Image (tube, rainbow, N blue to C red; front, top):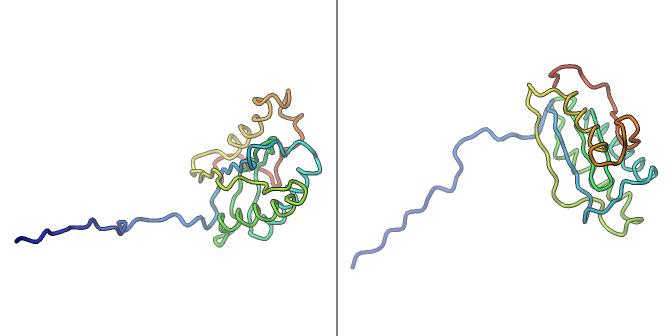
Length: 164
């Protein structure tokens, strides 16, 4: 009786470069609010979240090039300031701090578990992407002009061209 031979496919991934989210990279990040609730409609709530963002960005060595808090999500562009700046740690700390700050009032977590993030390529213009973020409230019918929406801004001067 012949024995069946089972051949397993190698489960080890090939030697590939894995992006480690460390260093002076720029990221476009979208953080949806838990259950798509309209949380960011009052100045005191927005200020509390921005204070958490400022403190976490300082602690983790990140610049916040642009942010916009729409009622049910936050969109931002951040950049690591040094080679040890680690985006996943920064984002985890920010999300935890902001959620912990507002959870007693909200009665639930601030954020959905999943979020969107994208590493910006060197050729992508930070200012153009920031401008598109700042137009989001107008497109959503929350403001007539970009300058009239109060819950957006930057913690730094945005570089002119393709700066990382």
